[in-house]
Image (cartoon, rainbow, N blue to C red; front, side):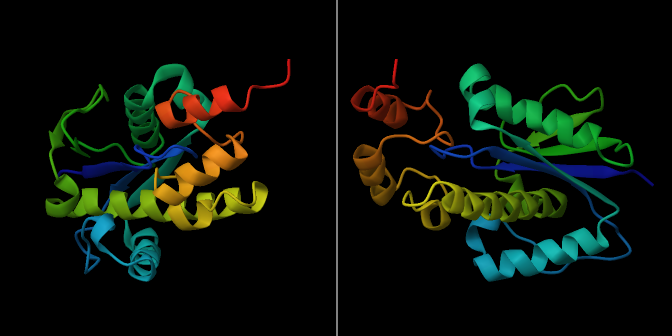
Length: 193
């Protein structure tokens, strides 16, 4: 029986916080019903499904790549690195890796990139849900660490509210300085020399 792993990330377009990558090998004997692209599910439903995925998957792994690392190597390379690490840390070796999107890194294992795979491939949907739930929890914690930015609400994405608070408070250590809106805010709030 072949073993397929689904891989997806969350937080690629955010201005702050890590990119989070999950890899999941589902169990054909214990199906998780209701899997879908994490973006179309309510936060409550994602939480329920994440618990079910963790309980029933044959293997799963979550990896975070920090904002600082994203600034060093760029978001594409950070996402690909996270994918490689998540798959490498799985407790069983898949025969095929299904990646959401149009590009897959070299895993040393056959892989297939599937555009909108999080909506069509259950293992990718499961990875999408785990990555999103984990990242959302991290962003709530970042709001506690850096209060006033609203990370618990906008999760670091470039909403109007986030851009306004960024221009008012300047960037915090969780922000990705290589992203244009943050780089502009850095000019207005130069670091102490």
